[in-house]
Image 1 (cartoon, rainbow, N blue to C red):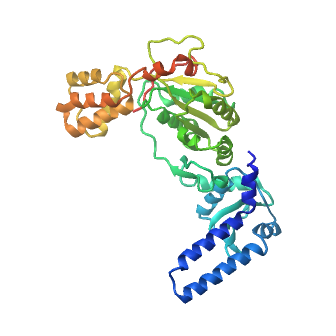
Image 2 (spheres, one colour):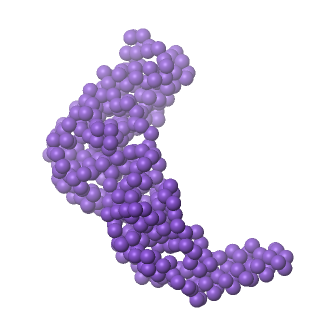
Image 3 (spheres, one colour):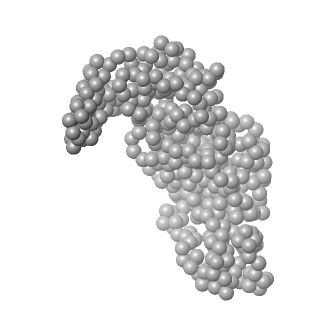
Length: 419
């Protein structure tokens, strides 16, 4: 995406703005000082003006002489931050009074960036323009601390993604409880071989779609899968070219786009176009979407269709439902055991299971936690309180209308529920 002319003009002359800011900061710091502080401030300002008006050899010139080539990556600033935060030894070369060239050189790759006053200015620059070597180096750095990463982001304009993104290792996903296991889903997807595949997991909130997605990823990768999770709230803060660049440079085995709102018609076409652009033989894209579902309602053709959806963007949909009585009992037993509780007697447990109808796994976990904390004798009141905080079944579907939900593939997974 080409930046507007006024932004490019600002970027071209940003060294003047930085110099003005530093001069103002210097004046502010020195205004209450004595003669010595004032003299030093004057010398500092003079040096900044000279450095700005009559710059010496630029960082780009230094790098060009060393065989480096410029790049124009939409997330170049973020990639340079990854390099800065790595354990690789860096070579720092001063440029003028306030700029630096930072280089990371290995036997296989050379990467460099230019910083002004400690802030990202330009880069990455690649030795001999070798992008493949750079990507290989990034892989070692990004995934050295684990194979499950979650991306977060700040809203606003950030020059090439500098200071915009944060990467956080994800803890191991909790266990999955259901009649149909992650291995079943993984086996179905694996039948398509190396064909690019985008899978949508849809169902009510709290049933563990994200947990299942991560388990599917682990099964398919036999323990070596690299999963990158990006939540829908993050996608709203990112341009789609940035998301595509993240997939390109991170090269995850599974890209998990969590809680994507495909019912928002203002963004649906753009989201689907992005999904099409993300397709790659060596990356499974899993999308989760919150959507109310009813076990006993058989959808007709077109009930869940929305504009722009087709194979090649979303290939397969697994639909999930709130747990039935048998599934709720299994989930509650799991959490009673997790919290170190004795499972209630059969008659009491049956009443608890009946009282928790239409609650998803996340809320069943809270029910078990409250009974553990407040005592079994309080189970009725605690369940009532939890039910008051849970979403009303079918409410969102009534408000949106059937036409806003995605179509079902017909391969409904009625028996799958998280812990």
